[in-house]
Image 1 (tube, helix red, strand yellow):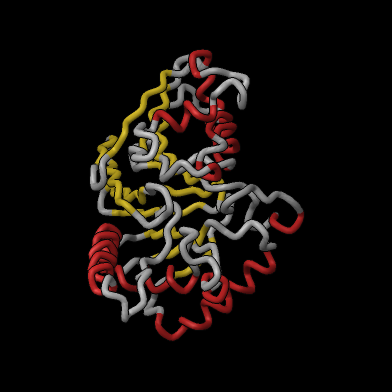
Image 2 (tube, helix red, strand yellow):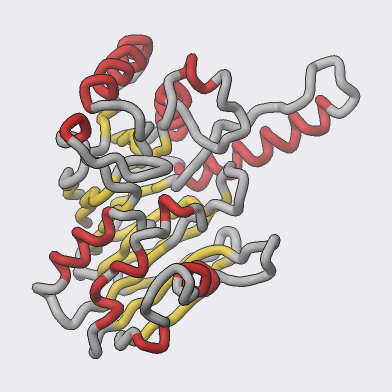
Length: 295
């Protein structure tokens, strides 16, 4: 199984001279199973560069798994060039949205409203299919199995685990560490704490023993204190999670868009130093555009 990062920034694209090393595109990850099945995790602006590469591999059969519908995870989708070419097949997977009452098809519907984009879906020449997944549902694609898990974000957010011939990858999409919103003296504290512990255990079980864990690590631990409830994680929480579930490799992603490459490396080094004596062999790295992992 092979993994390649095409976009690693969060919230908004941040191109420019200060983000060249790690990249300014928003989230998109390519995974190839041993049989060559194409699995794409999220469709941020990084998916455009992936699309250009795929034009050398026609016809394309792409399976796009959307973690959630916030713009930075979907706004490259209308620019996924294989959608416009006859003979290609694009299947999109994602969650049901309880707010709108729609399935994953709404991701495309909203973006392709004529007020926002000049091409309608009816004019796209590829065969396009949609599959709305349930929590815990598994999809078999050749030799790979992709399983959806519910994570912690202001909208429904699926993390995806990909298992292929004994190797595994888990991507969180956007995820905030679970915490109790009540004060300890509040009557609702104990009940809510039990709920949070139950949700944490479910997520940990879904990640257990994964070879590669890719986690939203937007903030420093100090920054996070003023951003609780925004739905994003921090470096220290990501490292703690990887150690808790027994992951072999951790890749921190969804980099804060205002942070230059130099600043990103500095805050990452500070976080890593706090845990250096407790990593127990865990490899911890920053995700960057173009980085390839072979399992």
